[in-house]
Length: 138
Ligand SMILES: [Zn+2]
Image (tube, rainbow, N blue to C red):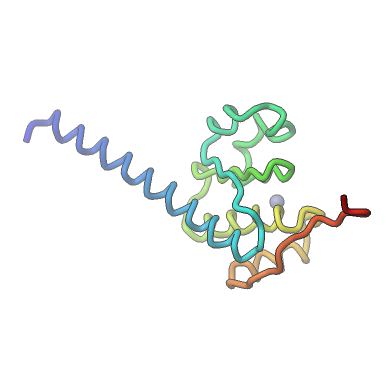
C-alpha cells in the first residue's frame, strides 16, 4: 500500500469518527429531549456553526460561545455543544442534560434546584411536557 493511499484512508477514518460522534450526540439529545418532554432542539457542535447562524438567534452568546461547554439559545430552541472543549463522555452527557434543563425549565437559573434537575435527568427521569403558561389563550 502506498503512503498516499494510507493517508487517504486515515482521512476517511477521521471523518467517520466525526460522523459517529455527531450521530451519537444527536441521538442522546433525542433521547433526553423525549424524557424532558420538549421538542428536540437544533444542535450545533462547532463555534463555526454558531457563527454561521443568523446573528439574531445567537446574539449575546456568539463570539463568546467558545468559552463554554455548552450554550442554550432558549428563544430559538437551539443548543451549542462545544465538543472541542469537552474532555470525556461523562462531561458530554452532563453538558447535554444541562442545556436541555435550560430548555425545559427556561425560568430557572443555575443553582441547587437546577443541579438537582440535571442529576435527575442523568438518572433517566421522565418529566411532564413543558407548557408555556399563557393568560387568556387565543
Ligand atoms: Zn447553564
